[in-house]
Amino acid sequence: MSSYWPETESLDIPHLDARGIRLRVGMVTGQSRWSSTSVKGSIGGGMYNGTGSVHGSVSSTVTNHQRVFVHFPEDSSEVALEWDDWNFDIREGHTLILACGPTDDRACLAYNADTRQPGPKNSLKIGEIATSYARTFALDLWFWRLIAIGMVVAAGALIFGIFHGMFPYAHEAVKGGAGVAGCVGCWLFIAGPLSRWAGRVYRRRLGRRLRKALLPEMERAAGRVPRSSQLTSAVA
Image: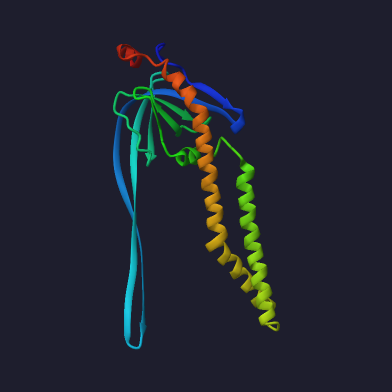
């Protein structure tokens, strides 16, 4: 262990129900970047009076990947971190302060002590990693989830009632199947998207509040990082 480097800190953030978030200080020893493209398409067509038509659509999504190797002089360990769409500007030799969970080595937030810039800029990315050890306004999330569940149940009951009114002598299993189909349709097209939207809003809000709480501590840790004249002896 080097006496020059700050030791790992453990932080508690009570208003986010976060316990034992670790601030680790390390040096970038290498990195690589690449991109991948996901392509989705659909095609359809029809025919009328002997004439037909074909139409389709294609969409693509580009994801920017980043793999970073970080050496921790405190215990001479090294980790490889993979970030998607962080677009975090670093180079070999830069010093990073990483905020990690109590038992999770993935960083939910990173701070470049040389450029004084945090990453990622997208709060949703922070929240997606931190949901396992931090919470905020959980009642809001469950409110929208309960709304989605209520919509599904109501849709099933409505379809069942309509089917029963139109076909009163139909078998109960058929009526039940119609109700189930109504539930599935409501989930696929209304309640499911609503629930996923609520989850994204929750994770983005969590990420925003966690970054606000952690940045002052990370800036303070950056002030204790050894200067360039000490780096050789610090890493040794």
